[in-house]
Length: 255
Length: 261
Ligand SMILES: Nc1ncnc2c1ncn2[C@@H]1O[C@H](COP(=O)(O)OP(=O)(O)OP(=O)(O)O)[C@@H](O)[C@H]1O
Ligand SMILES: [Mg+2]
Image (cartoon, rainbow over all chains, first blue to last red):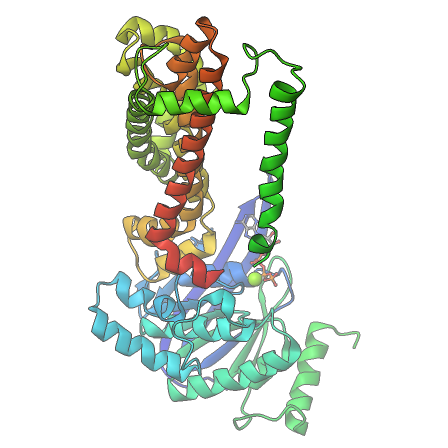
C-alpha cells in the first residue's frame, strides 16, 4: 500500500555520527530514507536512545547530517525554518514569558504587528484548550498544560510540518492518554503534516496514519505499517490489538 | 508574616550589644575610653560631626560622606556600564571571549587594593586613583556574573528561537538576556557591596577626605569615638545602598518575579 498525497518532506540515506570523547566515531543514525506525505500523521517508533531526537533535529535543520540529505518541497534543508514547527521532549517554554508571550514568540520574531499576532496566538491557545491561562507563567501550569502551550506555540508560526519529539513522554499515564485524544482533535481541526516520535506502541497506534519502525543503534528503518483504522481509535478494538501484537513481535521476536 | 512576628528578636539582639557595650565601658570600666568609647561618647561625637564639626580631620561628616559616595558611585556606575555589556559580549561571541579572556584571567586575581600603588603613581591621591580602583573591582564582578548568566541559556530555548527564524541578535535579546537577568542583577548587587568596601580601604591608604580618611585621621589623633562613628556610618551607608539597589531592581522587573514566585 502506498500512502496518498504529495511528498512534502524527504530524507535520503540520512546518517549521523558523533565523535565520542575518546575520539572514536559513534554512529547513531545508520542509513535512513523515507518520505513524508502532505497532511499525514507519521509516527517514528523506536526504542529509547535509538537516535529519535537526533533524527528529528536533522529534519528540523537544527543539526547537519554526516551523510545524506533532507529535502522539503524540493528544497534542501540546511537551517531551521518556521515552516517546520517543533514540539520538544522536555519543557521548552520560556519561563519568563506568559503562555501568550510564548505562543506569540514566533510571529513576534518575524515582526508581525502586535494586534495581529495576538489574534493568531489567541486562536491557537483556544484550540489547545488553554483559554483563561493566557497570563499564566509556565511554572504555574501542569505538565500536560505546558505541552498544550508548546503545541500552540509550534502551530502559531503556521508551519506546514510539525515535528513532535515524544511530547507526552514525561506525563503520567492518565494525562498522556488524555493528551493523545486532544492532539488528535487539534490535528483534525487544523490539519498539518505531523512527524511524531514515540517509544510507546499504543500512542503510536492511536495517532498514526503510518508507523515507521526504527531499530537500535545505528538506527535504520526496519519496517513500515499503514494504520487504516477509523478515528478516533479504540485501544481494545480487536484490529488495534492485532496490529499491536504484530509490531511488538517485530520489535522483540521472543514475545 | 513570620518576619514581623519575630521582629522583637532582632531588636533584642541590637539591645544586647548596646547593653554589653555600656557594661564594658561606663559601668565596669573594663576598657579605657581611648580604646573603646562608651555609647554616650559615641553619640556625642556623632552629634558633633553631623552638626558640621570639622575636628580632628578637617571636614564635617557630610563632606566625608559626599566624597566617599561620589567616588564609589562614579567608579561603580562606570564598572556596570562597561562590565555588563562586556560580560554579555564575551559569553555570546566566541571571538570576543577568546580576545578578552586571557587578559581578564590575568587581571582578575589581582585584589583591587593591589592596584593602589600604581594608581597613585598615575593619578596622585585624589579622586582619579580611587575611582579607577572601584571601577576595576565592580567591573570584574559585573563581567563574571553577566558571563555566567548568559552561559546558563538552555540549548532547547535557543533551538526554539531558531526554528522561529530568530536572528542571532534576537536570540541574544529575547532568550539569553532574560535567562541571564537574575544573575546580572546579582552581579550589580555584589559589585556595589565590594565597591563600597574597596573604597573605604583605599581611603585608609590614600586620600585627603572621605570616610576612610576620617577614621584613619581619628586613629592618628587618638579619637576612638570618631573611629566608631565612622565605622557605624560606613556600615549604615553600605546597607542603605544595597537596599536601595534592591528597591530599584524590583521596580524594573518586579511584576514578573513576583508572579513567577
Ligand atoms: N550532540 C551529541 N554528541 C554526542 N552524542 C550524542 C549527541 N546527541 C546525541 N548523542 C548520542 O546519540 C544517542 C541517541 O540520542 P538521541 O537523543 O537522539 O536518542 P533518543 O532516541 O531521542 O533517546 P530518548 O528516547 O532518550 O529520547 C545517545 O546515545 C546519545 O548519547
Ligand atoms: Mg529523544
